[in-house]
Image (cartoon, rainbow, N blue to C red; front, side, top):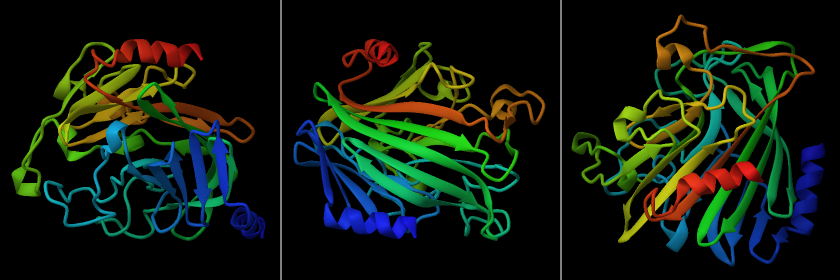
Amino acid sequence: MFCRILFVALAIVPTFSFAADVEITDDGNKAVVTLDGQPFTEYRYTGYAKPILYPVFGPGQKPMTRNYPMVKGIDNEATDHPHHKSIWYTHDEVGEIRFWMENGEGKTAKDVGTQVQTSIKIDGNKIVTEDDWRSADGETVCSDQRTLTFGVIGEARYIDYEVTWIASSGKVIIGDTKEGTMGIRTNPALRLKADPKKGNHTAVGHSINSEGVKDGQMWGKRAAWVDYWGDIDGQVTGVAIFDNPSNPRHPTWWHARDYGLVAANPFGVNHFEGKPDGSGDMTLEPGKPITFRYRFLFHTGDAETADIAAAYQSYCDQ
């Protein structure tokens, strides 16, 4: 009932603005974000196994994420991993339920859960939601509260993504697996390696992390931030992802593949470091919520030109 009433209120007064730059309009299925009247992103919270941000436009209105599977048949886009939907937050093996994978990917319905939004409000330049992580049987495994904040820094655009895990149904184990957690599937131009057999014939991407590790060597490494860039439609454009220093297990590990998946994952110690299975487990206790914060910074130029190291320090100083 609360959710329905909230949507009615949003329908009556659908538009919110922040400093005349950020405007968010909610229609009951998605919240559309614009910057100075230009499309930035949409927070789509119905129609998928989890809420996603899609599309996402960087400086110069360059598309920053893959279209598949939301839009199919796009040239130069691989059609692998349909659960890699633009930008999302989820994790496998939460209370022994899989949330990273989705039904139809070789998993039975009993294995796979979904994230269901239970409330949403718009607060200036922020989207604030509550969500249940539910099993295929409809039982709530745990819950979360999310705050997504949108803005600009110079010509760069950012999304701050905060998630607070809540043990709403009793103690739950967040499991040790590489399949998670704060993820983006980048524009195919930012891939580090092409794969013509899977549909991608052009890859011009480069990457580096805060420790100076580059490209494919970044997988499974710990770092405070990572940055990916490349020529997107004639403009060198990139996306940096920042791990907030307040996050548990900072600096995080990165599930960063050469085909465009980049995910901050503080739980997959077994896979990343070869330690015994369960080394990365984290227990979510009733009355003891756990909060993670990240920033996506969409910028022009490479990591050096955009001075990502300084941008990260500024983020930490806020």
